[in-house]
Image 1 (cartoon, helix red, strand yellow):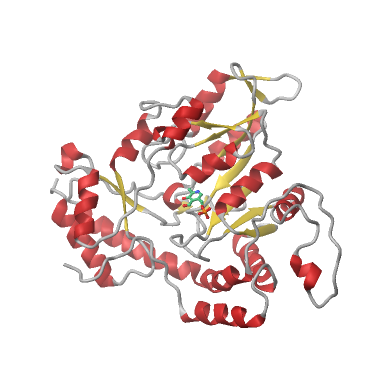
Image 2: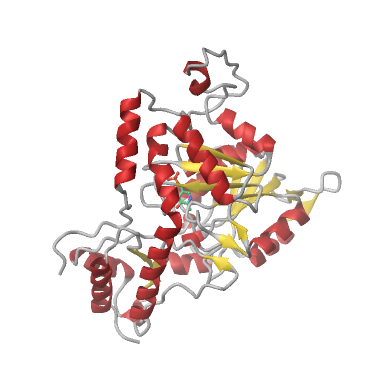
Length: 402
Ligand SMILES: Cc1ncc(COP(=O)(O)O)c(C=O)c1O
């Protein structure tokens, strides 16, 4: 057995980041400044989008994207229950109602078939505005928020088709999907707004941090201003060597800006984004080969028309087949010093969403099946070959053969 505990999602931080953070600390400028602007420029180029706005989290990005799209208390927004709570909470913080729609079993992403079915059965299309209005709540359906779960791009053609037909915004949660490509189009350059995460366990990290990309100038300006108190000029403009510049408050904004301290990590992490993806692909392929004969399900194969960002390697442990429950499997892995994650407990099973919106067990069979059985194995570029051997050995020790 391993000597030290293998932490799930530990990031790979290299010497360049450490030097850059130290230089930032010595520079006298810790908050939003030239390094954030450099990171935004680099990210914009990487994605191929017109605008990229760095923020202190993907959660902030989702919230500001909703605001930029004008979503509010009269509105409803469709999303997946198989996501982190931040996706739904960002909708709720605008006063809008989150509408969960079940996932496709294989991709674990929101099912466009279910989305269309739901819209057809629950909404009337207002003849004047062309927008769907809920027959019961009288609220308007304003947007779809697809989540590229585990790094696998959603079926964007079908989602965009529905959005076009019903006049909906598409705000993508790409927290897992910095590297994703869908039919030769880079994730971040497809929907109206796309939100990325650089949280400590993500594919590239800034500790806490996020980015929104868009090709819409109006959205970009709103996000910039709403992200820093609603002011027309940030501190960089007020205190730089160009002389003090007055600002106006034009919206009641938020404090969501990224710091140069965080961008010091991002500007170097981004140069290695493809190298890290390659390493996670190697680990993924080793897991696939090593678990082929076991009674656990591994992620479904990846089509040629996408680049999967390989954020999470999720296995499904069905007690009837594996002879062990998911929770027990996880406990035993911890005893073998292997840390794991659980992505996700479907949102409709959490008390808040049940209490506030009446969701209940049984509402989303696919999401629920996965939620009850899923376990995420370590998949960081930081893993050594011997770490990967340890994970494989531990999983093989605990799972029955087919
Ligand atoms: C699908 C999804 N969306 C949004 C977030 C929020 O990201 P952040 O921690 O950067 O706010 C996460 C974070 O884990 C996530 O997994």
